[in-house]
Length: 300
Image (cartoon, rainbow, N blue to C red; front, top):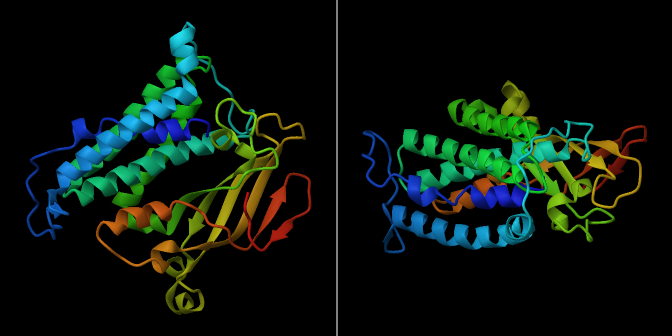
């Protein structure tokens, strides 16, 4: 997960160069107004993306690669840090899955908002996270980090699941989410920006829309505003944590924000983004070898 913020920023860097500008409108398709506050939507999408990406890239370079690329020389190297028994007990891998998954959906939603046709929106949303996932690993290969193929496996899996959700809408009943609340140490002394690598404070969830999943009349007994979620994380895996590393499991309720928040055109992009975040709700948390711990609000 240490690269989530870099990955998220880079993902939009080249949108302006791949955004189709003259795509014919499909017949029999309801099209949004091509203007937004007096400007063409495609132009708005391009300019905002370029401006935001440039600023984000400058900040991310300062965080992750500045020392390596300005003051040091590293030979390219590859290594595997394992999967679910590595330094973060797999939390970083779940973060790679989430990064590509999130970027795919955000890009696709943004392309559709800008009135790009389905095929072009899909391929743009696939290309950006895919290209940048590889680019970041190559960049890491020439830094103090290393090119890590297992990271790319999880990036690919997250991207693939996003595509499947578009192709098979039923899979939207199983939404992948992320929650974060600072752990005891909070990664405060981490030189690579604590929140991003404060793995002990992260949980990754599969949130299930039980109202839609349950058959027939049973739907009426489950409120559409609540989902059921299962989560995975780890304990004592943040920078300078000294305790015994343990896997973290959780099960609890989740707020179905798509059923709670109002609908809207431009607002829909933010609504879909919010639905990729797991907010505190009642649940039970387990650590390997420890008793279950019930919480009114699971935070991390």
